[in-house]
Length: 424
Figure (tube, rainbow, N blue to C red):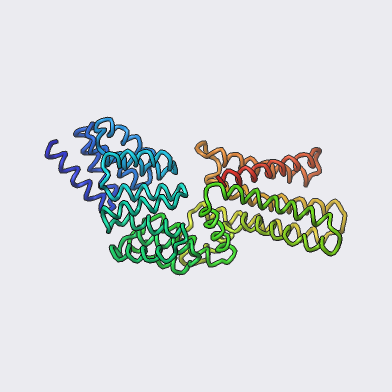
């Protein structure tokens, strides 16, 4: 290796440690210009891509680096981390297993393996891997964080708190540790303590996106329904991969049973049976709307408005606007003469506007772009169909009832498909 190339790589490493990514990129580009087939340069460029949240590009570079130096376990570690960032825990586990086969004495590798297992909801195995890493290095920050998170998931609260304290004692100025502790507190419903640690993480590293997301969740948890739903979501996650799917099906089955009993049991029992029906419907509606409504609340919060992305701001405003419009049309229907065509139109308009709150939450901005996912395109299509149905309704054009029925059926299918996909 030439002295000039060695100097560029040394500078790049130092700049990466200081999070000066653009300066590091310049040094690495200069190094690549000298030797484009240097595996060390490719590995550092892959790390730069991972640090700037571009895991797909990092994988391409790591493939080249491993072809040049297949015995370098660090490149396998980076490959695992890239897959972890891309939410592919199976591939991440394979890569980190290969890295550990080459180098079983690196505590950081065990830490990443533990976090992968946590994502797979294999919490006992994650705790074991974190402990293995701590046997190698008792002060490894990654292993301590993974251990506290695994303990939290296993409901070993006091052990988790002790590990959190050990983690912060090792390095009180580590933003990653404060972020992990914040999420642990958030999972236990302690949003004030969580917010404190997220603030600390952002003070240390204002670019910590995980801490920024956690801060939003902590601030929104001030709203009781949002806090309850968040706790329910964490509880579902702690029960394994299939519990979310079973809960969706189970809640619907209970709803149908209660609805049947409410319509077939004699009075006064039939009135009591409507209680679980009403509770189920309230749960569903709140779970649909609470996130954009909570984001709308954050628009007027001194800390929250800076944490929201532009997309979250737009969607929260859209949902509140749709809900407000639906409410006004429904009020108009209440004050209209009963059993008139005008009342029916107002009620149907209110229903369509209210149902649009769901597809509105799945849109991306700008609205029209070839790069958008099929999910965005389907929901944008629902918007277009709803607007067409409303125009037909207003001007009394033929096939109005059929188009509204088609829209509602497609809306229902899209809603159930999204619910089942999200539960997997």
